[in-house]
Image (tube, rainbow, N blue to C red; front, side, top):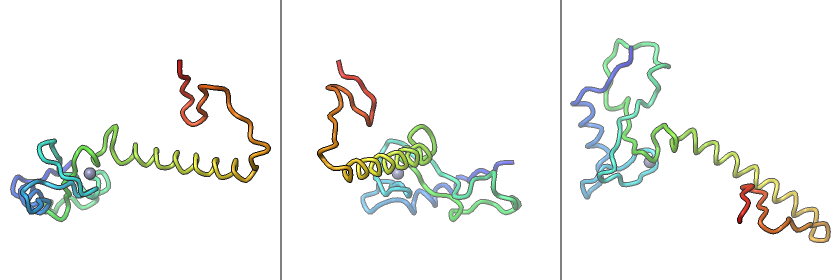
Length: 119
Ligand SMILES: [Zn+2]
């Protein structure tokens, strides 16, 4: 069974994440969330918690905005992008070593990084 944070614990987490101007701040990236909405995230996914007899406390949760919460733009999706970016950088370095004399210009409109054909 999944434990949920009690209203009292949620309030304590939101209070902790509040900046001095009274706005909740994302505890993942530090971004001010204002009225964009936020969620209390389980620091340890409930699926991984073995002992669920203890009630959740404010130490078990963190305030996350849509910027950092799981989902289409969540942490996992961004990790994938970072990995792809580092692979592209690696490839650029290798091309650089080959030297300019062996560099062949791609056809106009061809972008090897996005494969987007401009019309
Ligand atoms: Zn964030």
